[in-house]
Length: 384
Image 1 (cartoon, rainbow, N blue to C red):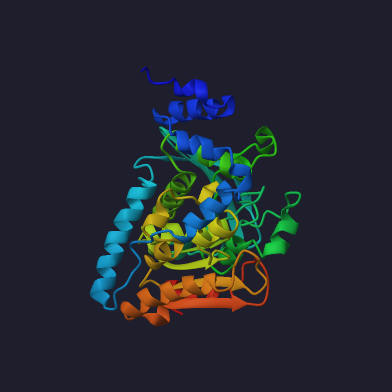
Image 2: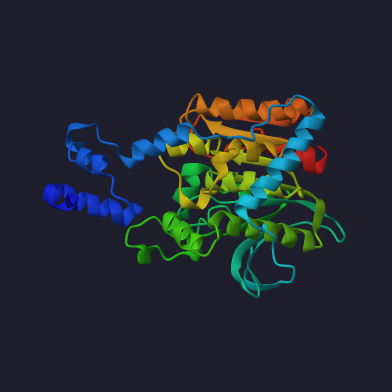
């Protein structure tokens, strides 16, 4: 007796489901197909819930678990190698030129608007702020000052209150820390990162987030916005070290919000940074992706298989670093921020330098503080 054609005895709806199953998997699971007709009677499985649960189960297989300095140094070597494999090459161009776009004499400093250029690499706009009164042959310490999210990019960092809207932006976040540092006697370089300020035309995105769109587009090329920005930061360090008025061995880094995240990144990767101040960025990728979201400019695919931002921050040790958090900063989540702090404390203790780890927990919101950072930079970079 011939075997019946199963497709003829199945209801039409189940035939459709079975056909889709075959096209997807190459086989027909009749039981699964039939069961799918009862999906309305079962709890819905939404992708956001599934991803949140997956984030909560993230492996973080390379958390530091040692106690000795030798274990800490070995862990840093291994985790830095893993991080570099995840983000790719962030080396700045070996040969490059500088185009001067504008020079403005201010009462206490000179503001240079420059364009760093090299073949095959997008040009990087930067401000170079040089304090007045530098004597012949004198060298000053340098500071890399990185901006966060926002339509103005690097303009607030350099104190461009003459540009409409920038003065209010500065007031809201105490955002002109580049200007504050040059007034403190430092030579300051402030890059404009992607996709912000003059490096993006937001009108062309139709209301979509340029961070998310840039991340997806660059992923199609095997690239990351974060790595491109890290390259430009390191390019700025090259610029500082090329200047005759800069002490090339005394350079610090500072930033708020995304600028804080990128200050953490460049300090972790580049040993030329001798002291760092990370503001408004004491949050974990695991927390942000489980409870809410994070922008594409901060994403490192695969990171949570091995560690989190806390492990990247741990690569700064044993160098001094201050982490700023405002009491009303909605981007800093209680309990999660303490997880971050404890992981940092563990590596600094193992290296025998717990006094080099600083936390500025101040009354305020998502703003730059500088309360601990300014005297710390003076001590480390000026020997005061």
